[in-house]
Every structure is written in C-alpha cells, then in structure tokens.
Length: 256
Ligand code: SF4
Image (cartoon, rainbow, N blue to C red; front, side):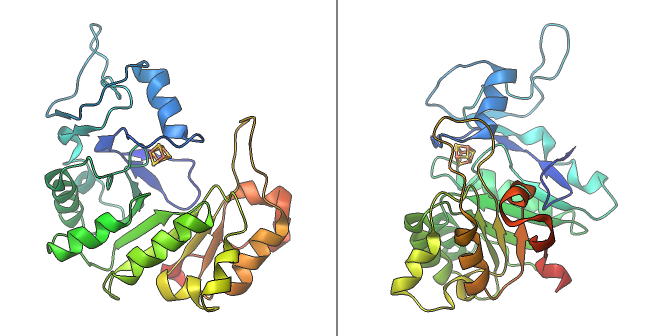
C-alpha cells in the first residue's frame, strides 16, 4: 500500500496493475512504461511472488502495462490497523472485461478481511459491477464504494444505465475527470436529478499534464454540474485556477 497524492483518498493499493484501455491521458501507463519498459503484449499475468531484478529489487511492473495480478499483495491490507480510505487499483482497470471474476473476488475477499478501511473502486466499464452483482459477487458492505469515470456525455449515459441497474444499497460515485465537455448537456433528455439519482458522490477534476490537445474546462461546465447535483462534491486541486480557491468544494459522502 502506498501513500498517495490523490486528494480524495489516503492511500492507493495495487494488487492488479495494467490495463488494455487506451486513454490518451493515462498517467498509470506512463508510470508503468517508465518503470517496467514499453513491452506490448495481449496476455494477462499472475504473480504469486514479487518478481525481482538481478540485483534483488522488486519490479513493480514486471509486465509493463499488461494486466498483472500481484497476488502476494493481498495480505497487505490487514497489516494496516489504522482506518484508511483506499483507492483500489489506481494503476489498472480492475473491472475491465479482460480481468477474470476470480481476480476481482480475491481482491474483494482481501478487503472484507480488513473491514477497518474504506475502499474506493473506479472503472471505465461500470456494466461489470452489474454483472458481478447478478452473479452474487459484488459486496454491498457500507465501506465499499463503486465509482465510474466520466469524461463526456456518452460515458455519463453509460454510467447512468449501469448504475441504474445496480441495487440501491450499493454506494456509487462518478469521477468526472478529466472533464472534457459540458456533460450537463445530457440533462436535456433527463431530469434535474440525473446526477443525484444515480450517484452518491461526485469528484470533478480538470486534465493535467502537457498533452498537446489538453482540455481546460471553462468554469460554466463545473458550475453546471454543481447546480444540478444534489450530492456531495469533491473538487480536485486542478480546478483551483478555474473556479478559485474560495469556491472549491471538498465534500465526502461519509461526512455528510
Ligand atoms: S482505464 Fe484508467 S488505467 Fe486504463 S488506460 Fe484508461 S486511464 Fe489508464
């Protein structure tokens, strides 16, 4: 488990790394390629023990950005007695279609074994939550939070469909980052309650880095989300230059 600079959690924990999605703004891929080389491979990998270099150093990305289950990390959580809010698999999409149910269930089991923590999951494939739920494999404990990434209206529509099919008891959230367009345009065909009806929490962030086509969202896009959402909102520091420090909202659903 690592301390993290991610503002909405205390730590990140990565029993699975790597992803077959191809998001142009992906920070995780850059890290994996930097420390694991630029090998491209269509396989997924399982490691029961850490893979080490010739000098005995643990290699965090032995298969670069190919999906890899670091099974030896599963017993890390219960060693942390102090409760933490943990982002699970910040370096992967744990719910990508290529990830076997068994990997996900082993990760869930490790979380259940350390109930002192809160767990935040995030995917670009929220339909997988529903599939797991229908197979009775999605834990609905109060400390499990299921999020989906939304950057545009198309993804918001998919997220609403997937979360609409989830049981009401599940804790859900939208991570609207990076905000690439005015997603409230979707409101034209939905009601004002679009956000709050399907999500218990909203995180908003702007694109970071120096990508040539980088999108800097205008303040009105953020204002629109805030005015339509009736749930806690957490604004990432990337929004400070856009909305101003005094207008920043840093709300957590478990504090409300
Ligand atoms: S889904 Fe996440 S981990 Fe996968 S490529 Fe996109 S940003 Fe990277």
